[in-house]
Every structure is written in C-alpha cells, then in structure tokens.
Amino acid sequence: MKDKRGNSHPIQDLIQEIRDIFLNKGFDEIENQIFIPEDEVYKQYGSEAPVVLDRCYYIAGLPRPDIGLSTKEIDKIMQINSEIDISELKNIFREYRDGSIPGDNIIEEMVSRLKISTKEAIEVINLFPAFRDIKAVSSKITLRSHMTAAWYLTLEAVQDKYKLPIKLFSIGLRFRREQRMDATHLRVHYGASCVIMDKNLTVDEGKRMSEEILHDLGFRNIKFIKKIVTSNYYESGTEYEIFSNGIEIADCGMYSEQSLRNYHLKYPVFNLGFGLERILMLRMNKSDVREVLYPQFYQSLEFTDEEIAKNIRIDKTPKSATGKKLANEIIKIAKENANADSPCKFFVWKGRIKGRLMRLFVLEKEKNTKLLGPAAMNEIYVYDGNIYGIPKNVKEFDNKLSKIIDNGVSTGITYLDAVANLFAYRIEKDGERFMQVKMAKTPSDVNIEIDNI
Image (cartoon, rainbow, N blue to C red):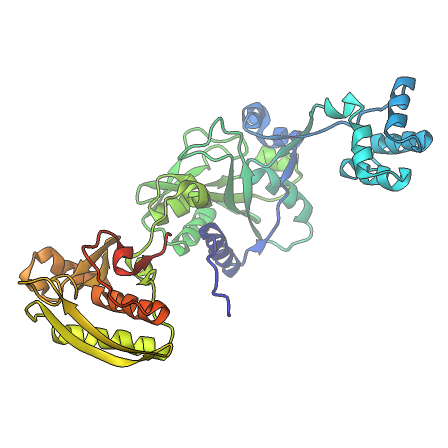
C-alpha cells in the first residue's frame, strides 16, 4: 500500500518560503553561530550588554570529579567483584577526569577493561557520592538571543572573501530567558534575518529592500516608524519598527559605527529581522503563539466539513457478492414501497446463503403507519462542523435545512443504506431470521461509524 504524503509543519513551510524570497533577491544563505561568547555581547551592545545578557541562557556543564580510592572504598569494590583490577580502575577514573573518556562512556570502559558486568560497573559508580553530587558550573558562553549577535562574527569572517555588496541571510532559532511561557512569550522561537554590507550604503536603500522582501511575504500598506530609543548596536536615528496594516511585523536599522569598529568591519551594514511565529499568527488568525509552534499541545482539533464527511461511513457491510446484492435489493424494495400502509410485507429475495435456502421480506407489523419511518430516507450531511440527517423533501421543513443542503457536504449515505447493509451483513454472517431497527439515539444504532478523531 502506497503511503500518502504526510503533513509538514507550517513553520517549516514558512521557512522554505522565506528562503526562496531571499535567494531570489540575490542573498546568500548562512548558518550563523548559536553559541555566542559573553564578550561578544559586550562588544556589540556596550553599556546595554548586562540588560541583554539578563535574557540570555548561559551554557553550563558538569565538572569531572577527582575520584580517589580509600581502603574502605576498595574493600566495598572487592565485595562487588573480587577480580576487579584496582590499578586499572584508577586509570579509568583518571582518564575520565582528564576528559579522555566521555562521561557517557565510563560504564562501557569499565565493563570492557575490568571484565565486569554492566550491573557491577553501576554498583561501583554508586559507591562514590562525587558522581551523584556534581553541580553544573556556568561558562561564559551564551545561547544566541538575537541573530545580530552572530552577524558581527560572520561579517568579520567574510568581508575580505566576498565581493561587495555582501548580501546574507540566515533563518534559525533564538533563545530568550523569558520568565514564563504564555500566549505571547516563548523561550525558543524562529527568526529570519538578513544583512547588507556595501560602500556608502544608506538606511533608505535598506528600507527599500526590506519593503520588497515583506511585500513578497504578502504584507501590504507597509510603514516604517522610527524608534525613539535605539538599541546600542544600531546607529542612533536609524532603527525602525516596520508595520503592515497597523501591526508590527519586523525591525531594521544600520549597525552603529562603534560596533562595526569593534569587529574591524570596513563598510556600512544594514540589518532586517523578523519573527516567524508572529507572521504565522497573523496568517492563521491565531492569538496564541503556542498554538502555532506546538499545536500538538495547545491546539484543539479542528476539521473542515469535507474532512469530517470523509470519516463517516457505513460500519458493517456484507463481504460476498450475494450479500452485497441482498443489501441493494432491500434498499430497492423498501424505496418502492416506502409509503405502503401497515401492516405490510414485501418479498425481496430468494436464494442460498451458506447452503441454506432463504426467502427475505421487508415488513412493518405495527398498524396505522408506513413501511418506512419518516427519517429512513434522510441523507447524512456535514455543515459547520455538525452532522445532520436531512430529509429529501427538505422544502417542507425549516429553511435552515435548505441551507445545510446548499452549503454542507453530503456523505451520500442514507439511514436506509446503512440499515440495509447491516441486515445483509447479519444474514450473511449468522443467517438471522428476524431483524429490526427501533428508535435510534446514536449513529451506531443505525450502523453508522464516525472516526474518533
């Protein structure tokens, strides 16, 4: 069976869309560094750096303990396995401390070199509290909180390797040490960013390019609003918030001369950056960013009428050609005599099933009614997320029912279709003599199956 194509995540679809836009405009794609030394943030932000670093994650690691073996500990090791080579164990611990043995390989090394079992190696490790009591020690390396933090390093590396103008873009994760995660705050999110470096480059040229890029993303009525308070890495008076139809969508500006000098960058640099989740929120009309990025946790299931209709089916159906013919005959005779006064009885079929000769009739025993009840010919429709059984003579009823037929999605299934298939299934399977469907309260009462999802 051929697998159907799966569903991609909308954030990845948007990333591909943005990549195509930048590439078509002559930008080269760059993978910027994620790990940014603290010193680089000071070089970029100056006196503003401590405030910026407050929102950064620092990389921490577990120090390697210096494990010594006392006489008491050696005795306990011997109780675990008297064949353990203590000298070799000391070598293993020394190599672990020096970094020659990765932390996740120490058990494997002990098993291999000491000729002991995994269980015994773990028991030996558990003798030393130093392994359990290790506390993480922070480094001076941060996780990238702004793509700008990485652009300076990249531009410094490529300015003498690329021809001017240098046009680069990068799409990736940004990490922010938010105090909480809620509808508008994420600790990790995607950002798209580009830089242009060129002789005599002006902010107006950068703004024109930004407008083209955002226009290709579908934004209209774009306005640039100059920020009163400018980030330190932007030149004063050159940072702009970008709005589309009154909604902020991006930020841009010229890198400050001081920050450029700190990285020996020779030419002016323009930067544009925007968050991808925000764009998706606008496109998808979502107010909670978590629904956009993590729908498996935060989004309730939503289906179109077409999707619901595709998941409604007749549950039990006959398998054999005779059984299927039987179901069709029940439907045919029942329709032809639907309005016959009761009590009534009509011949449907005669033949053999599983070697037994059978004669089949449809009947209504109750007096003063019809062969088929008023809902038997109702057809199942889906409209506005709801499932309805709609009669054929809908014009005799409420106009709301006409709206369902005109705008809803038909499954092509009537209650009679479902019940006839159920009768044929039971006759084929068990040869039942008498069957009837009384008042139905659930879809399964009339042999209708709706997928749980």
